Length: 369
Image 1 (cartoon, rainbow, N blue to C red):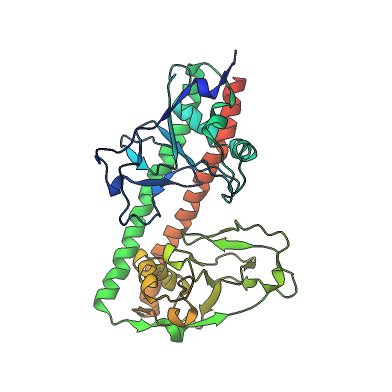
Image 2: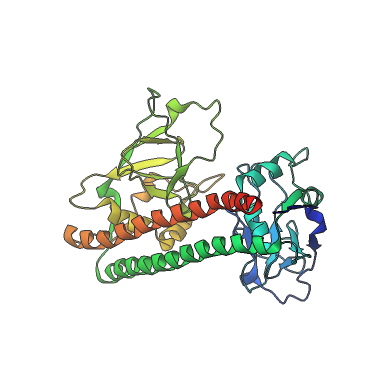
C-alpha cells in the first residue's frame, strides 16, 4: 500500500470565527481536558463577555497551545457532535480543509496517541510558559494511507467508543438508583453528625517502606499522582490502608475524596486528610462514601470551608456533616447496589483506557495495511 507524505498545515485550516452576535450563551461554553475531551468550563464566567469567544463547529478541533505544567500532555479535543461550542479566545480552533485526503476522526486518533503528546511537548517553546503554536502544528509531517483505509480503521475505533458510551449510559442509570435510594432516606429519617462514627488517621511513611504514591481525582477515585516526585521526602507522606478515606481539603468541592479498596497500602501527600470508620457494624464505609461522593455534598463543602489563602474543609468540619444512619441491614441493601455501580465504574474506566491505548495500534495498522 502506498503512503503519501504531507505537511499537516496543507490539510487543515485555522478558524477564527467569533461569537460576535451572541448566538451562543453560557451553556455552550466549553473547556478542554488532558483526556482530550470537551468539558464544562471551570472558569468564573460572572461578568465575562462572550463576544470574543471562538466557535467550535461540528467536526472542528480546538486546543490550548500552552503545554507547560500540563502533565506532559496537550489539551486538544474534536467536536464529534452536531452542536456548536464556544471556547476562550486563548484556544486555537481549526478544521480539515481537505476531507477527501484526511478523515477528521482519523486525525483525532493520531492526536490521541502518547507519541503526539510527547511530540507537542518537545516542540513547545517559550520563556515563561511553553506553547505548541499553530505554526508548529502546521509543520507536522504526517504519512497517510488512502482515505478508504483511514475510514476502515476509524469505523473500528468508533464501534469501540459507541460500545463504551452505551455501557456508560447504563452506569449512570445505576447511579440514579443509588441516589434516589439515599435521597429517600434523607427525606424520611433524621440526620445526625458523622463525627462519632469516624476518626482521623495520621500514619506517616517514616520507614519509607511504602512507595505506592497515589492521588485522588475529581471522580472520587485513587489515581497515579500527577505531581513530580523527584526529591520529595516520602517519610512525611501519609499511609492509606484498605477502607480508609482520603481527601484533599482544598479540592473536596470538586469531588477529590475517595475510599481506598486495594489491599496494597498506598501513600498520599501530607496535605491530604485520612480517616476511617470506627465501627463498621454501625456505619459501613461504602454507605458513607455514597453520601460523600454526591454532588450535593461537594457543593456544600464550599459553604463550610474556611481559610485565609485557600478555603479548606478540615476534619473538624467533616465531623459535623449530617446524614441519616439507618440500621446496618438497610445500609447493606443500599451498599449492594452501590458496589455493583463501583465495579462497573472501574470497568468503564478500563474500557476508556483500552480505547486510548488502541489509537496508536490502529494508526500503526493503517500504515502497514
